[in-house]
Length: 375
Picture 1 (cartoon, helix red, strand yellow):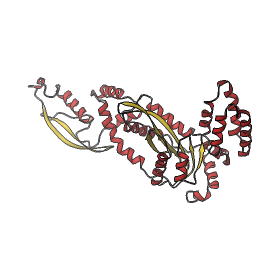
Picture 2 (cartoon, rainbow, N blue to C red; picture 1 turned 45 degrees about the vertical axis):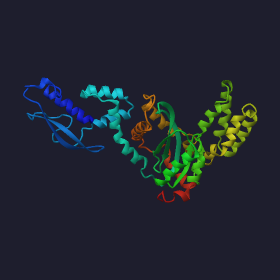
Picture 3 (cartoon, rainbow, N blue to C red; picture 1 turned 90 degrees about the vertical axis):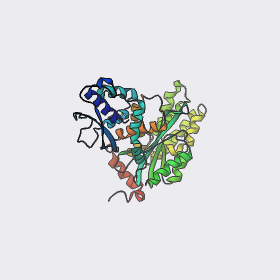
Picture 4 (spheres, rainbow, N blue to C red; picture 1 turned 120 degrees about the vertical axis):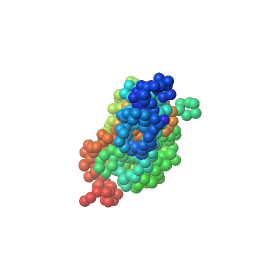
């Protein structure tokens, strides 16, 4: 029985003053008299309902009026509550207080399942031909699988489009990241119309560099400086951290790549014997860590860290923090999609200094942006 149907039954019981099949209805002068079938339009498509009738013809449902052809958005209310991170218990209490009906977790799941076609359409929608900057990161959740709880990652791809606005291109849920996994993501983007990405900014995602080089060979990769510093600090005793961070600042805050290289040589001489793992990590990732040095300040500030996508993930956390674990991947995808759509409503403005940034991009990537920028 649908939620709307449940409310109809509650309303007819209230109108008649007794429950269905109850002997209290004997000789009351009015009783049930079957149903009228009715098709209504909802946000999720057409739906057929059965409106109860009474013999005296006095029953007038409040949830959907006699001559109304559209839903009063009751199911949309539940989906909106679900999107804000309300637990199924909170939703159940709310619906009981307002409408006097019980909404079980199974009912909430069935209602929210109605957005699955919308998720599929969103995840496969056509994308722009070129994106100046793309950010990649993962956010981890606990999901039930075969009577045990495992960690799963939602891999997000967020772009800055040609208008300078943030846009989530897609979300992929998986257990293990690898070159083949990321190649599948990149090919998905290509199949949806993306032909070029100028700069891709990433955390230390395993296998991504190989995948992006294969799918988009002209894309420059920038490894997040902040993540690199955090990883470096894992190997440093507290009493040395302040000094070491100050020396790392001289590298990543240098004005030119030459100055950064000189500062790294000094850093290596000072800390190489005490912390060889840190030095080796910076050496191995040097090209991806220093890609931003070729650009002016406005672009450097935007790409040297993945703060933009991490801000989006913080918004997801606000919604998902009430859940300790999700019953299925599908349940996880539903809440992430709803939270993403809600968050994106606020992304109406271009990012700071975008006009300066796009002017610089037009110079650095003239041949690749020629058809995108009207002269």
